[in-house]
Structure formats: C-alpha cells, structure tokens
Length: 161
Image (cartoon, rainbow, N blue to C red):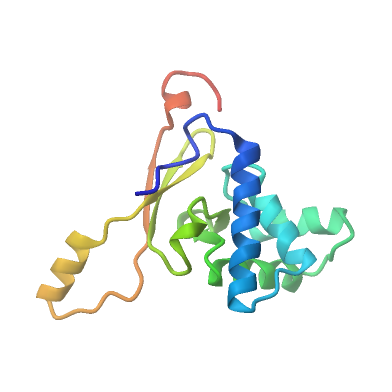
C-alpha cells in the first residue's frame, strides 16, 4: 500500500523525477500528449507539497512565457487531474501533484492539510466503510473526496516545514 508523502522527510528530487517519469510512461501507454505546458504545470505542482491555485500556476507560466490566459492553466490542470497526475483539493480550491501516480487514473485519495504551513499530504483512501454504508442504502458512490485539516508534525513541534 502506498505511503503518505508530504510531511515525512524524503528525497524530493527522486519524488519529482519519479512522478514525471510515471506521467510520461502513462501518457505513452494511453496515447495522451504530455505537452510542454502540461509537463511544466506538473513540474510546478511537484516543486513543493503545497496546493496551488490555478492563478498561482498561471502566474508562473506567464513569467516563463508559456501563456498568460486562464484557459492555459485550467486546460493543463484538467488534463493532469483527468490522467491521475494531480488532484483538486476542494477545501482550498487548489491543485496538488499526485504522489501515487502508479495507482492509476481515478484512484481515491485522502488529503491531510496542515492549517498552519499549508503542506498537503496524500494518503490512500479506504472506501470500504463508506461503500458498505452506501450499498446498504442502495446508493452507488461515484466519487468521494476526503480532506482532513490539522497540524503536520513540524507545526506541532514548532518547527516550520
């Protein structure tokens, strides 16, 4: 089972390299195009484990000469979320790179959001209890988002991440 990433010390360079390689491999297998703008948006999301709004991404793209109109950012973010390379954090109206792209497109995830420093960790979601309750009610779950807000280990001890 994938581990929670974001709060624990890890090789961030390997984290980025692995995610880009997984995205390239998945796109090749699916016949999808990881265009230069889409790739750059993924790289921007991977730079930290903080969620970014579409306009934060757009500001970076504009500064790099890759586009300054909102559809540029939104199209790239939509592609990345549809392909399972990024997630939308509803509570923050922002996006974060998927830390478990090997789980495939459409996998369920839970998000642990630090209310102090803004780091977000992705944890594997366990849908069994919800699915069982839904089944008992005759309800079919099509999509579920779990977002928990609290304090990361660094903020709990007063160290800033």
